[in-house]
Image (tube, rainbow, N blue to C red):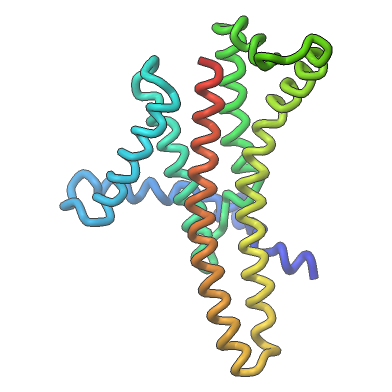
Length: 223
C-alpha cells in the first residue's frame, strides 16, 4: 500500500535515464517567445511580480553588490515553476525530492558561509554570541548558534519537499477513495479536491517565496 501511495513521486526510468527530471528545465522553453511576442497580461503580471521581489530583496541585501537580487529572483522563479507544474496530472514534481531541494539549498548556504568566514571573520564570530548574553551562557549560545547555522540547508530543503509531498499525498489518498463512494459523496469529494487544489496552488507560491526570502536573509547576514 505504501509503495503504491508514494509511486507518484517515483521518477520512472527509460533508456537508462530518468526522463521525468526533464520537467525541471521545461521553463526554458518559455523564455524565447518573450523577445518577439507582444507582451501579454500574463507577462505584465510576471514583470510586476519580479519588480516587487527586486525591491524587497534589494532592501534585505542592501546596495553593496548590484544585481545580487537577480540570483534570488531566478531561484524563486525556478522553484515556483516546478511547484506549479507538479500540480498538473502525470507531470513529475521535482521539488518533492530532496535531491532537487538540497542541491539548491546546500551550494547557497556553503557559498554564504565561505564568503562570510573568509571576508568577515570577526563579524561571523560576533554572530555566534548574541548581544546581551550573560557570560555564563556564552559557551552554550556558541553551540546553539553553530548548530542552527549547520542545519539551515537541511531545514530549507526539508521544508520545501515536505510541503510538496504532504499536499500531493492528501490529494492521492482522497482520489483513491472515489471508486467506493456513492454519487452524493463523490460530489462532496470533488468539491474538497478543488479546494485542496486551490490550497496547493497557494502553498506552491508561498513555499517558493519562503525559500527565496530565507536564502536572501542568510546572504544578508554574512555581509
